[in-house]
Amino acid sequence: MTRRMRRIVIHPDVSALLGEMGKGDPLKAVDIASVDCTVCGEREVLALDGPPLSMILEKTKKNGRQMVRLQFAHERCAPSAVAHGHPDEIEPALENLAVILMTRNGVATLAFAPRSPFVASQGHGDDWEDLWTAHFREAGFVATDASADLEPLQEWCVEVRATAITIVGPAPHVYEFAVGADPAWDEAIRERPLCLVITGLLDIADFDSKGFHQAVDDGRGVVALLKVVDRR
Image (cartoon, rainbow, N blue to C red; front, side, top):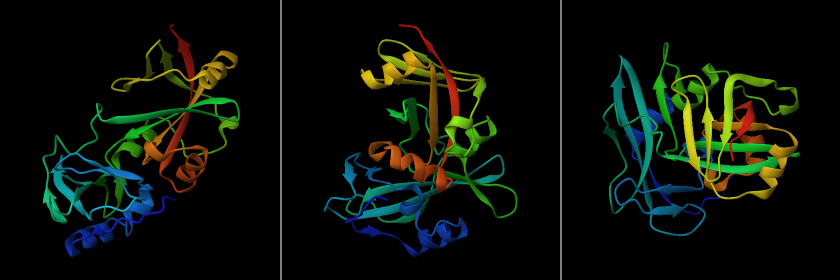
């Protein structure tokens, strides 16, 4: 779990809403290593000393369901508060995704997630769920670290090109990433054209094999084994 030195300012209204959502410590739940100020855009690494940060919850309704997004800002830029957001802007943006390539036990692995820490929606009763993770769980991704027991997910694949990788599934699932060369990852897909994909409440900037285990164990990540189509 990320070691934090940064002081986080949390308004009582924010604490109360987080309590309703069952997230007493969202930083622990998401394992955030760094955040972008929602006002000035400057990135702050939480393990380094620096100016205090305000925790902001944007709240709105869409299709009759309450939705909440966690944001951060420098305390000098904006105070901690429960703010009102626009329903079309509060969901994770496909153009605001982060990705990392790695190998685990010789298996090509790809982790990706929204840069925004989390977006939650109130479902049946008082239960809250993370929209992004739930979206992939409904598509067939599962919470397991036993990748050897997985079968390739039907109708999904990872397309590899010279400078980009695209995860392709049934509409509307298309996620494209610009990536650099990774010799170990390339060697893994040549030997076995499969890729273990994980997504969820992940901090890609601070993600590694240990983070993979923790994300699955904590219920923050879901995985699928996808066939690889090399188009280079």
